[in-house]
Length: 252
Image (cartoon, rainbow, N blue to C red; front, side, top):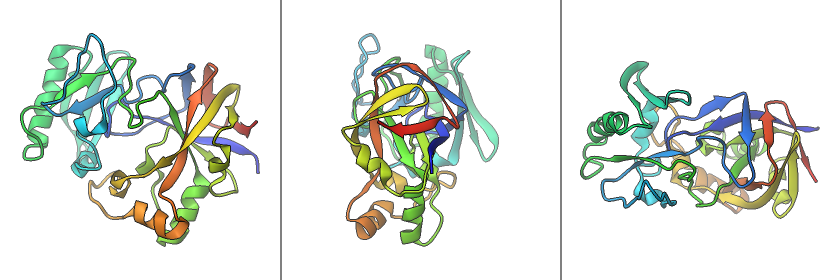
């Protein structure tokens, strides 16, 4: 079976809602536009907005430690820089987070929402071109849906692909096929990428993406079923262009 892209996602605010896309513009050595551009940081996080640098995930509210974040539904408007937050279908906060006033509105919301989990008022950081990804390098993530289905076989129930927060999901017949690409070049449509490593999974995957509860132990299931805790691969973009749903994926 020919491989093809089935879903594309970006995550404008680290650990908040996955936003589904029909297409994504890629550039060499960059993440998807606005992917993990923002992060809700602890008050103690040290960050220079005039010279932004990557920060480890321990500086941020994240699903691994703050599963209630999944109760929120967020959307980011690129044209206005506005972040809208819903809970239970109702708007609870809205701010233009590319401005100090808008960031302050969102910070005050999270100070209340995360009360007891954080000390002081959280800071909404704008990394601009520096993405707050877990690995510290500007990479994109890719997962085969067949691999998730094989994990479902071990778990014995459906596993929502959103738990893994990848940028690209593809359809194909062979589980774990993406692991064989490490060190090789692949193409998605006309875009070329270099696959650099497998992705180790942490407790963030245990959180239900809508309910904000821990109802699975996927790293343990991976370890028991496959003797590893990996799902998906990271790749470095090496040519520019646009990736669209339905584009073929080819290992060169």
